[in-house]
Length: 417
Image (cartoon, rainbow, N blue to C red):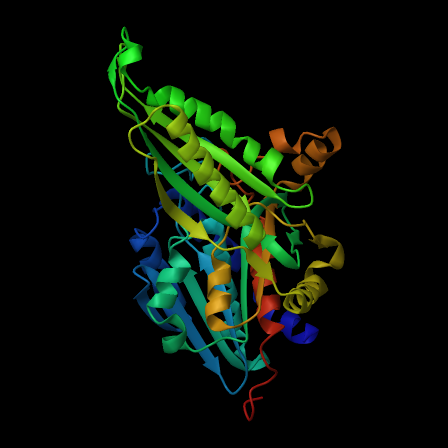
């Protein structure tokens, strides 16, 4: 296997790196939000089709699936997501987003570029493997809807079930490194919209009102006790109130207030308890405030905990480490970020291996780590300043995908050596 990986990766020369860097910068400058990735999907389909893949567009609305068969053997699924987020970019880069208020702040442009590069190398080096490569360019990962949409659109009925589901995502780690944690690796993520209804009136007669602002403020403070007083120390949960909106005039008490909550957990039992506690607290605060109506609690985005199969992680990372060097493969532990790749694995009844791809300048990261200031000085995904260094991030991502795929594909196609 190591020899095959080396042979396939030989095609990643300087000209290919420059071509991939140009694609990355183009995708970064033209971000598109979830289920609106039309330009991105068209560009990906055009490139991958030119490599000899059978390409199907509009899978799960805006998703793209590319398939390359080479003799008998296993099927491996490689996934990259390609939606952006509603974040205004502040990196100051020459290839910064040209779309106001939208940015590839989570590195999905890098995920996509790496997979495009890996698919080209696998196509050109197909004499070194047998089986089927299924590449999934997924929309709407940020909203937790994309993987589900592709499954419901017949992803596995139309393109077959893989032996393994592989993916990677950017992280605030040194470029040139990857990280993979076996077991529960990415948290379940739930977002909620809460509408608290009071009774508005003039600010001069608060006694004639039921103030939803005070109700919301009390609820926000009380919700902080869910993790500190209702979750065991051995368990992990995060409850964040990311938005509180109410009123538009200092002289008026509004009729309602709206909260937006984000919840992260790793265990189904803990998730159930946390969500129940949130509902209990919100209802109690409404009752204590004298509200005529209970709160309206609406689930929004949701994705389950992502579990890396231990055997799949070992098999994949062993192959990746054989070319990157074992010192460059780490275990970062479980992360509170959410990712819907696990939905693909569950639907396919296949093991999942999802790893992190470092994108920070190694020297800058080392300085911040030595000073103990990585949280402050290393821009993380979903911030306006997140900007991975192009190299060696691209080369590392392509290498990891190629090595990971070849760890699962068969050897030389029968009769075609």
